[in-house]
Length: 135
Image (cartoon, rainbow, N blue to C red; front, side, top):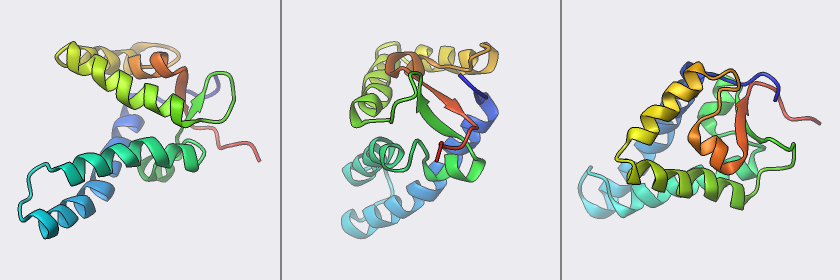
């Protein structure tokens, strides 16, 4: 693992993604449904964004790209939908089942561990790096 990325950069990328993707999805939801609250449109849009964009864009999301960080597999192979399903869906399930405690533990893991891997990284066999993709 080369140049693992810590808590603040990962949090910043998540916040950027929330703003960049969340606002347009909220506007679309408002236009179609008539309210600003969480809707199936925003939930599905966020889920698809989290699953598809990193696979299609060599581990980047828009927020990660702005900050120059990306998700990579430990073994160096290309991210696939199975990996992202494990990272997003299975890890999300773990976080819900643990009533958010797993998410808090993950934040501490990213902040304190030398390899900067969270629970979702262990589940999916990934980590977040500042290295650009190899040409």
